[in-house]
Amino acid sequence: MLAQLQEVSAKKNKKLDLSRVMTGVPEGSRNATAAQVIGKLVRNADKDVLPMVWELIKIWNERNTPQMDTKELSSVFHSISAREFGNRELPHDLQVMTWGDVLQKDFPEIEWIVDKLLVLGSVNQLASESGVGKTWLGLYIAQCVCAGSPLFGRFQTIQSNVLYLDGENGLRALHDRGRILQFTDAMKDSLYFISDYELSLNSDDSIQTLIKIIQDKNIKLVIVDTFRSFSGFEIDENKAMDIRQFFKRFFTLRELGVTVLFMEHNRKPGIGEHGNPSKSQVLGSQDKLASVDSVLMLKKKPNSTTIQVHQVKQRHAREIEPFAFELVESGGFTSLEYREVDKEATALEKSKEEIFDLLESNVGAEYTIKELVPLVKSGRDSTDKALKELITEGLVESFRRDGSQAIWYRLMPQYSETELPGS
Image (cartoon, rainbow, N blue to C red; front, side, top):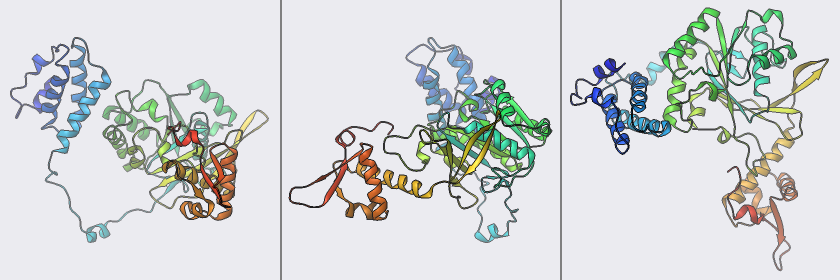
């Protein structure tokens, strides 16, 4: 590896003595030395050399006295790499196309491995808080695709082999849930599992190994449970560059007609977040959302047995209306059964959240219902019901001004003067 990296930087970096640098440096010069070495190594290199540079820098850090913190080292690496690549000109072979050229392209019709939810040859995300039901739904999707049966009896599937990457549950839990969901004997040779807490998909080698498995087993759907379990310890979820580079590796699978579904954790809703799940609740960089073709988010109300499914992004079609499912137990087995979403209740929750957001973003503001209706774009009845529930929940208070018959509304003092939990 050292010889390869020396070759990369040899032409314009003749003064760099990697042999000396690799012996390590004392505290006080580690950051500056790391920045210098990284800058020289990546200045004339292609992006595919970055993983080798990172491995070399980690080896170098082991010889420092004392070692730099890995997060600090990673921050220097990403900062310098982004600067070096950002300063480059566009590649000389950049293809510029006219609209006429685009029209001449012949694209195949879109196929859905799960109708209206997952496109064949796409990268997707299924997100929720912990314990809501992601794994149950993921296993059920695998079951339906393996059998070629409609999901919830409504969404047609293309019969395909499925690979389930488990990084959180363990084989015992998967075994028990599979029996409870009544996985059939016909699935023995169509559903494959890899349960490995140490596997990282953040390298070209691991992706090539994954592709070989996919091709050998004729797999068309890969479910990753969860993103955090398989993204590798060196990834910073809050750094756009890390996220983009990670997902870019999976574009090869998309081109091979393989669908990838990543399970993802959400943060818990903050006070006043009553409505539908929001993209902002996904942990880490928003580049996660930009890098995938579709996003499904789950929501479960306290003391409710139903789990709502909200499609908050679908690149290839119009987003469908929310629906729900329920885990129904009978005779020692569990089935996932379709449920309709109460649209009136969903609209009411949305109105509550819009009113709360308006009051929160205008600290000290006071409004009458007549003023609120056009601002939150809800009807008077919906706004009135939403305000009553917000008052009952202790988030908003109503009052009258001296000499006025109108009723005014504002945030309760504890929410207007301090930062809200979960914000």
